[in-house]
Length: 116
Length: 176
Image (cartoon, rainbow over all chains, first blue to last red; front, side, top):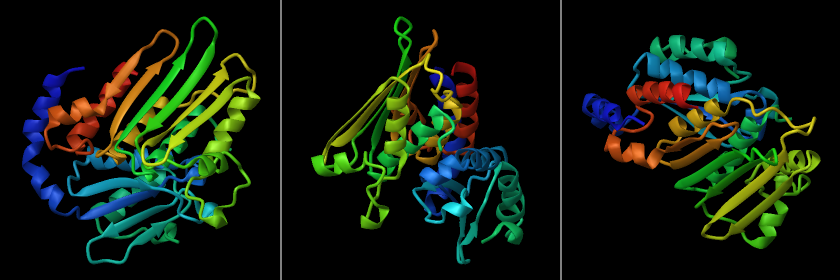
């Protein structure tokens, strides 16, 4: 465990933390109930987290919730964007998650073919 | 239904998250002498009374009657009991819930461990406000991670900050 490295991260990151805590621009919520997990939701969530991290999208938050209630369309993901209606994506996988990050989160164009 | 033990863990821990836990301890350990694998999850969530603690172990307890806990518990119990292991759930209303499952690691029907690393990673970064106390002691490895310690060091920078996500990802790759 290298606490020194965490300190460096803290110094570097503290500047944009205030901004981020005010209001995340986009929230990505992955359904992680039993059926979602069985259908592969963990890998979808992991992909979202990694892509957001890699692109240093400090105004995007990725989180998870329990059952979404539509087991046949799991893994399901909801994208909430300020002042826009939420977009629900179904039957997600890591490749689709990458497209949602690029097209929807970064470029502002929901991926209608994955939406349900 | 669950293809490996790491998915079982993910599911069981989601119950703790849903129960409002602020501290969740997860231990996966294998006794080198007996080859018994044990998995335990303890949380300080809202807990259950004795009747509910019994019901959540029953796969036929209907979701229509307001079931808030998924099928994960009966699934894990089933896996433990059909692979020569045991299952125990203790809960106290207002105090928390502990689940311990054991498995005989030599049993042919035991699902593989799966990707524990991804389960830990995803839990930490999608719930940065929860303190996770993680231990993985299997086959000579002894990995410990207490995210409360990291949070103290980060002093307000959340565990899901992109910089921290990258660091955590590397850290898990290196040590787990």
